[in-house]
Amino acid sequence: MGVALYEASAAVVTVDEFGNGNIDGSPLLWSIAVGPGGLTLAYTLPFPVAEGEGVLWEPPTPGSVSDVIQFAGNTLFFYSDNSDGVDSPADISGLPLSPFPPTLASWEQTTPAGNGFWGYTPSSGQPGYYAGDTVTYNVISDYAVPEPSTWLAGLSALGMLASLGRRSRKA
Image (cartoon, rainbow, N blue to C red; front, side):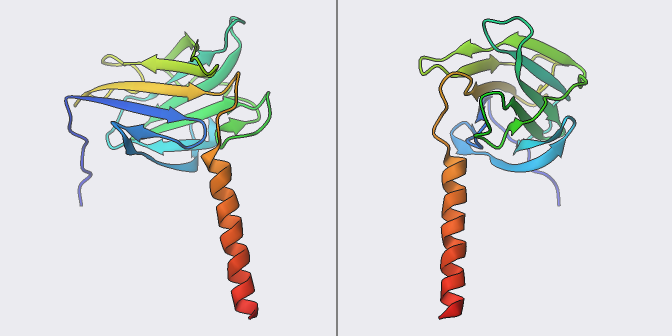
C-alpha cells in the first residue's frame, strides 16, 4: 500500500503547541512521539519534507530560544520551553541541545493576542521543504498570553469517560 501525497498548488500548515494543527483548514493528526530532540508533540504531515530545524528566539532577548521546530520524514516536531509552566504537550524541560542540521534561526513575531508567531516558507534544501508543493508553515507559541488549551479539555473529557466506565461496571 503506497502513501498518498498531498497535492495542491500551495499548502498552508498551521500548528501550535497544544495539538491544534491543520493543513489548508483540514486537521492534522498529532501525537506525543520521540523526535530528533527527544519526546515531544509531533504532527503528521501528508507529505515528506526535507530534514532540519527552525530555532525560534523570543523577543526581546537575542539568543533566548523559546521553541524548536524539527522536520524529519513526514513529521513536524514542536518543542517549547516550559519556563512559564507546563501547559501544553509541546512544553518540555530543556530544549534540544544539539542542532539537527540544517538549522535556521529566527525571531518570533508577536500576534495581536500577544502570542509568538513564526511564518516560514522554505526553499529547496531548507528544513520543511516539500518538492511537490509550496508550503508555508505558521507556528504559534504562547510566550506572552497562554492560549485556551483544547489538549487539557480533552484530557478532562477522557478522565470523565473513564470515571463513568468504572461506575457502570460496578452497577
